Image (tube, rainbow, N blue to C red; front, side, top):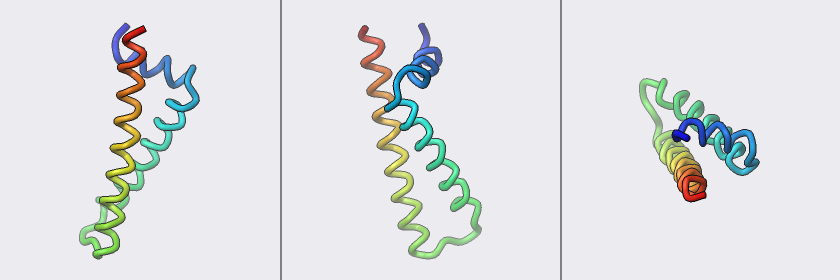
Length: 72
């Protein structure tokens, strides 16, 4: 089973993974909105960094869950 198949399986069968995946996608959309602006205020820069960190935390947890699944 390749990684994409594992991701699809976890999205269907694991509520935590599904939630993390949705949050990651939503954060990606927020980041795209911010990045679409020509110039960012200091507050927007801070918010951009905060969103990036949240997005990375979710991605790391999903990767950990994929690794755990591969061990089975």
